[in-house]
Every structure is written in structure tokens, then in C-alpha cells.
Length: 199
Length: 287
Image (tube, rainbow over all chains, first blue to last red; front, side, top):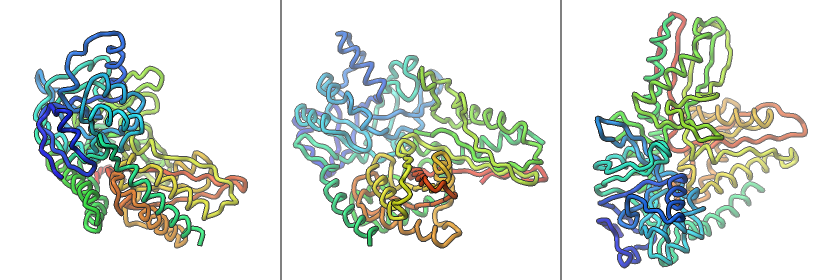
């Protein structure tokens, strides 16, 4: 089903989301790729605070193109990056920071699936490369963090968004996983393909 | 000769490549959307088509990964631009990075340092081909990291033959799932050597969708590979569906009898290209 969601999203609500649902988000997103995950988890380990609350926002695997305009910034293009790179630390990140909606592309692995079930979160897929479409739904940049240390793609950008989507739920908190379901079909198709090649 | 005019043509080409998808690719995506039966797959293709439209209308990059700028230059040995071309290309990339803007993507592999202008050691990368005459043709390929990460080289034992080649290509594309942003364009390079097969594969993705290799046997292999890949069910963005790839292009070179190099180059749906031609009368055309 199609759902209009205003962030922050409560765990009880997110626990109802199922694979195949399409979400449109209004509220705040923060971007984080490899380096930003590292940095925030490192701060957590050291007992240091980070200057925003990831539990109130959706996490977007994205390295945007932004342009300086006057004293502010404007988003030019902001599609998702490949999420599986974040599999190394996403379970810890979601457990430690309480983020309930992850946006990326390509899906994630078993460790993330387990933490989604434990913490009541979902992984959603945004059309890869649709950077201009995404930028259109971003109303403004609220803040940028660690820009000097991490550079434009890896910095944490906080976006205020309006009807950001379509986001397809591909991993849910009840163990639903579009990728593992699909993998069974693909394996069957692969056998047929191999048989044809050997004809 | 006019280096300023050439630089400005290169900036125009960089902008065109980043913001306007070539017609052959748009048409292939539209036809994939029309023939797709899965609702989820259709939704992905529609989002891509809307995105392409927004980028074109607003003259903004269609994808936030504006890629690594790669140039394929066919330079006439008598062209007056031979000496300056390399530096003019680099200047144009730096200028375009600010003007379009492009994401500053080049980083030092050891330190992670980002110069901010898409330049750096060997960047932008230029493939040179020297030809007769005094004209220059440049093809620009801004290639994103997600699909580049899915490229593969396999040194097959020659005994596996054509069946082995087919199996490896199809299995590899299936194993990529949604990661390279399908529907993809697959460039296959066969023979030559390890490096040559990869280069041939990359050249193959420069070809227009719908074009076929001039040799019938190679053209037939292209069609068969596309059909086999699209039997997999991976689909647009890996959400399931028919359109896993839009095209397969194959190039080959003669090989060592003991080696069967197979290069697989994966290009995302944002198959961005632009061409620049410098004619003998010094006129410059971008398309």
C-alpha cells in the first residue's frame, strides 16, 4: 500500500510497514555514507554527543551534489548510493542511534535485516540515479555537518523534504525481504538459462 | 587553432552529458517501461523517466554521481590540437565542475584527499587513438562508481569456448543484482589480453543502443546474451522484472592460444555520453 509519512516515525507505526509498501516522506532526512557512519559511531564509542538526533529523521545513503548559494546551499542532485557498503556498521548504527527508516539502493545483508526486526525499522529502496527527482522533493538544506573533514559526498547533510519518494519497502521488521524472495525466482531462472546455453 | 573555443565546447559537452540522456537510451527506457508487466518494475522505470525529464528541463545533472570523466580521443596526427588537447581537457573538467556543477569525485587512493576539481594523477583519463588526417573526434563518458564497481575481468581457460563465455557473462550480470542500477548496458570485451579485453568492453558501451556489431556472428552473440540476461528476472533496480539490461555490445581482439580474457563492463541506465568533433576547417561541433 501507499503511505504518506510525516517524520519522526514512531516504532509502532514502522512495525506495520511491509515489503511492497510505497512510502512518501515529509520531514527531515540526514545523509550518511561510509565515512559519516564511521565518524558518528566513533563519537558514540568515545561517549561524545553528535549535534543532531538520528532517531528523529530518516537515514539516507546518499552523497549529494550541492551548490553554495550566498550563505546557504542548494541541492542539485541527490539520489541513493549503494547501501551494501554500509552493511559493515549499519546494525550497530541503527541499534545505537534508533533511526527507523533507512533509504538506499540495492538492499542490505543479514546483519541489517536482524537489527530491523529487533529495533522495528525498515529499509526502503529509492530508484538508483534518480538524483534530479530526489532534489525536487528537497525543500531546503537545514544543516551540513563535518563538511571540511569529510568533503561534499561524505558529509552529513540534513534535508527538509516534502513527499520524498517513491520509496519501496524492500526489508521490513517482520522478516520480509524482497531480495531473498526474488533470489529464489532468479535461481530457478538461472537454471533455465544454463540449460539453454548448453543446448 | 582556438584553445578557448575548444575548452568552451568541452564544457558544453560535459554539461550535455551530465544533464541530457542520449535519445537512444531514453527510447530504450521508454520501451522497457511499456513492455514491463511487474508493477514494482514499472514504478522504477517511471521514476527514472520522470527524473530524466526534470534533469533535462532544469539543466541539472540527472544523477548525483556525475562520475569520473573519461575521454576517448581519435586524434588526427596532423591536428594542430595534439599538443594542447590534454591540458585543455583538464581545464574544461575543472571549469565544468564548478559551472554545472559536477560532484568532485576524484580522491587520492591513499589519503582520501579530494582536490575538489575532478582532477588528479591520471584524471581525467584520456584514451588516445592516433588516426590519419587533421580532424579530432572526442567521446566523453562520465561513468558512475556504482556500475563501475560491478565490472569484472575473467581469464577463462580457452577450453570453455563460447558456452563458457555466455555462462560467465550471464552469471556475472545476475550476481550484480540491483547494485549497478539496472537496466544496464553491458559491454563485453573478448580476447587481446587482460587490459585489452577491459578496454574493448568499455569501448563497446560507447556504441548506441540498437547498433549491432558489423560481423554477423558477434551481432548474434549480442542478441543472445541480452535475451539470456533478461530471462533472469533481476529487473529494473533489482526489484524483479524483465528489463535487467537494455543492450549488450561485444567487441573482440585476437588472443594468445593459452588465454581467453573476458572483460565485462557494466554501465548503469544513466548511459551518459557526448561527442565533440573538430573539423579540418577548425569548426567544432558538440552532439
